[in-house]
Image (cartoon, rainbow, N blue to C red; front, side):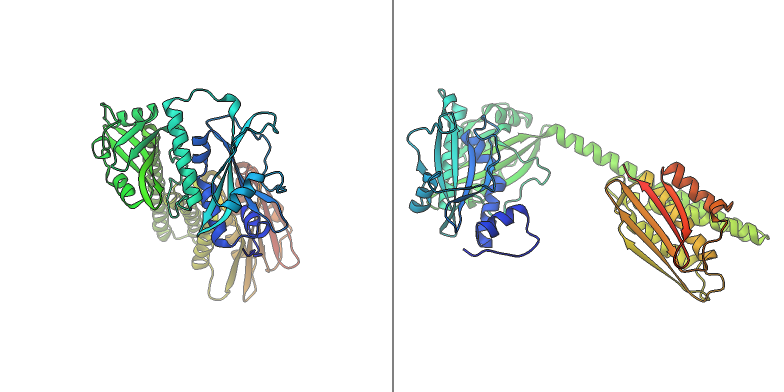
Length: 484
């Protein structure tokens, strides 16, 4: 085993690659196990600990899982602790003998009787770690059919870990965390795809699909509305998670092939009824689509207003009136940019850096003349902002940049404007700095409509501060906007 001393490692990689000295292949196998071993803990009614031998001697605990189906033995977190070999003799035996070691007599060292089992974790033909299953036997009672099914399934999964056939590589689980768990419903199928056991929750789930008769004793082809994927999993020995609908119900099922000596002996199926969850998701998708359509129509209406203002401006004889309408067109266009972005996003937050770039491009194309080329530089990241912040801020940025372009470079043959975003957890700081002729003394008390709009929006709409000041060269305007 060779350590990986690369930088930017996460806490688990640090444990596996550096402290335990595992190679990447072994570490990846253990990470797959840690991602899916809640199943084993729940079926076993036991706490799980994952130990890796370390070079200095002893065993490093790199994983811990508590069961949902029983009271935990360990209230403290043991991950990252090292134990001498004398404290964990069964781990040493499992490593040396490369087989599952079961403790005959309970251990009372924790204050309660604990029966321990050590399961070697095989990867690529080599035992690289040991899982201990530790169950409190003081609560033992005559097991029900459900508990016997749990324990039988746990024993088969434990043997698969020792054989190196569990966890499965490449299995894609529901990324939203909806994958069925042991308590949602469990069923067993034999190698001929006959259902030999189904928990009450599993039976209820299939009844939501319209299967009102007995489930146990039926084959998957008769009990399940869409059994093809499940049958493929049994025949190929590869797990599958899929969703099925019927009679208005929606059920998630995950079939885990049970393997022994290289062949499939049956399957463990976890079942979860998700009808209401899917119904809510569909309603939210419809609502989201409606909201995006509204933003799209608002954007179109604003563009229509801007077009009408342009037409009106062409008919005016007064140059001052035409300029006023042109400024209004730019303000409307800045607001339309936000609604255009919202019409394309799945939530009511917008990536403001994209909007800022669009504002800069719009001004660069619209009011920067060839006689005075101006360079714009956007720095930092504003990140995602809610619509109620993004809309006024886009207008504020447009006004500040327009004011800078029109007044900061009078008498200059070129200029530059820097816009910087500094995003914190609770504040967004926006700085607009130019290298122009400098700040007029009257800027703080200026009655221009543009600066009045900026001050009003920043202080009233955004509850922020507006601070113009003279820089080392030119003018610097700083906005501080609370985000929380």
